[in-house]
Image (cartoon, rainbow, N blue to C red):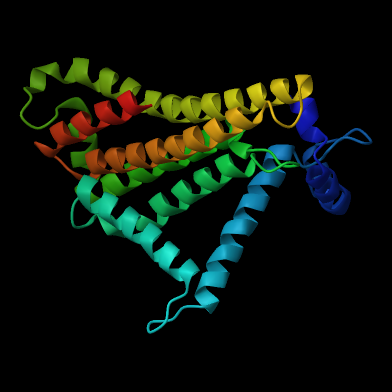
Amino acid sequence: MEQLHHELWIVKAVNALLGPLVAAMLAPFGFEFAPGHDVIPDYLVMCGVVLVVLVGLALLVRSQLSVDNPGRLQVVMEDIVGLFVDMLKTNIGEKGPKYFPLVAAIGLFIFTANMIGKIPGFMSPTANINVTLGCALTVWVYYHIQGIRVQGVVSYVKHFAAPPGAPLFIAPIMLPIEIISHLSRVLSLSIRLFGNIFGEELVVLILASIVPFLVPLPMMVLGIVTGTLQAFIFVMLTMIYLSGAVHTGHEDELREHGESHAHAAA
């Protein structure tokens, strides 16, 4: 599968254009590349394509913004923004929309990355563990930073060892459990997304190698559904983790209840 990905025309084109420059920039750091080897990996090229698509779409919508006569694209984008805002308010509260930039950006990136692999000649960068791990680490670092900003360092660290209402003597037991729990979130977010997208692309490639064209189509249609669902689950868990970081008390119970439902949906 990795070999097939490296044969993508866009990967070859980008490496032919930018490969020598990147190789020259990395040479002082001890990186050497064999002749004919792709300097820029396929998943990084596809991440760049996804970013170009999203930025281009945003600029297009911005150039056509209208209060009196909004176009169809503007209406669709406004509905997407409204969906994210409503979800943030539901899961975090009235202050939820302040986290819109990160949540919406990572949600749209994952959704577009999942879908772009359905286009012949492209691949889903989320079928590579490096991309999904990067997304998971971004969320993990972000919600901890927001928790510290809202609660302060001492209070935020304290709730790991002794959650509100819990006796202090259980702190030596709770602290390692909470640390393991939070570290496992990185693994859970990255492996779930990677496994689903990689598995779907692998099945499509196998079917296409046996009987091209028609046979892989049902699996590709199913991939659209699962790709959308995986992006939604990733966004939901991101908001739930944010809610747990910036809230305390009984709201933690709501966060745990919501997290269990999100994992069940996965």
